[in-house]
Length: 548
Image (tube, rainbow, N blue to C red):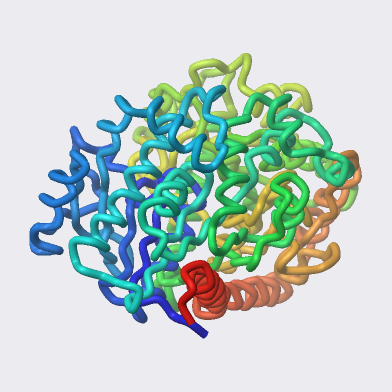
C-alpha cells in the first residue's frame, strides 16, 4: 500500500469545537501523529483573531520563514502552532477574510473550471468557500516553499462541503497533491430530514440536484457533489450515508471510514468509581432542589444529549417514549430524565442557584423543569413537548423531566461540571436519531460503561448490530423508519421499564458489555480505513500524472 509522507487535513472544526467532526479529528490526531510526526498538519479557520483561542498555542519556531512567504505570495495571514489536544499536532490557522473581497471573482473562476454553481449562494457558504480556497493556497505555498516534489507523496484531506474550494484550488494549482474528500452528512440528505420529508422510504426516488433546488441548498450541494467526483478518493463515515451519496451525489464512496475515538478521557479503576459517585451526587442535588422533594434512593437516571436538532436527533421520539414509560404497569422505580441539549438561554436560574447554595431556601416557581433560564419558553420545542405530554414533575408522577439547556463546559453556573463528568453518573442513555450519519453520543456513553439505546438510522447503531437488539446487549438498537415513530417509542419505553427492574448484578454485566463494545471502536481498529483511503488517493494521483 502507498503511504503519504505529508498529510494536510483541513476542516472548519480544526481548533474550533463545533460538532462531531471536531471529535473525529481531535481523537484521531494522536494515532496518526505516532506514524507521521510533524508531517501531519491540520488547517483550520482563524476565527479567534481578536481573542485568545484556548485550543491553540502559537509557536514561532515551527517552519521559520514560511509564514512570511504566505503573506507575500497570497496576502494571507496564518498562525502556526500546536492544537491543544492529545498528541499536540501542528495546526495552521488561516485568516481567509481578505479573500472575501475577491469572492465573486473566485466563484466565477471556479465555475469556469469545475461548473460549481455559486450564484444562489447565501449565508455561511461565502466564509466557508473562502476558507477552503485559502487552505488550498496554504498547502500549495508549503509545497513550493519547502521544495517538495513528486517523490514526496502529499495527501490533502478535506472534510465536508465547507472545505471543498480547497480541492478546486489544488486541482488547478497543485495537481501533485492527492486529494481526499470526506462528507460526514450530505447537504441534501440533511435538508430532506430537517424539512420533515420522508428520506428513507423514498431515497431511491430522489434526485439530488432537483431536491437541492427545492430546498434552497443549490450551491452547497453543487460544491459537495463536484468535490466528490473530482477528488482522488471520496469517503464517508457510514454505510447509511454511503447509500445517500450513491443516490444524491451520484457517486459511490471509495471507502467507508467509520468514526473511532480514544478512551484516554475515561477515568480508570478507583478514579472511575469516585467520578461516578461525584456525578450522581451532583445530579441528585440539582434534581431534588429543582423538584422540591427528595428522590428515591434507587432512582434511575436516564439522559440524552447532543445538538438541538429536534427531529434529526430523535428528541421528539425520546420525550414521547418517556411519556409511554409512565404507562408501563411494571415500572416500580422513580425515573429522572436529564435532557442535556444546549438551547437559547439567558444563563443559570438565579432562584435555583440560590436554593442550591442555601438548602433552607425552597423554590417557589411554576418552572420545575429547566436548570437555566430560557429566552422563549412558549416556542421551545422541548418545553412544548413536556407540556403536550402532561409531565408535571410532581412527586406522584413516575417520570421526572429535567431540561438542561446550557453547554456543559464546566462553568454553566448550576452543575459546573463538563458533560463527560455528568455522563459518567447516568444509568442509561437514549439517542433514537432519525438522521445521524455516525453518532458519537452513544459511543461516548458506552465508553463510560453507561448502556445506551440508539436507532438503526444512525451509522453507529448500524455498525453495532445489523438488526434491532435489546439494551441487555450493552447497546439497544431500535428500528426507525419514516413512519414508525409510535412503534419506536413503545419499544424504547419497554426497554427502559425492563432495565429498571434488573438486579444490580445484571446491570453491572450489561455495563461491562457496553464498555467492551466501545473498545472495538478505538482508532487503533479504525485507522486502517484511512490508510486504505490514502492508498487509493495516491494511486489515483499517480495515474493522473502518468507516474508509475
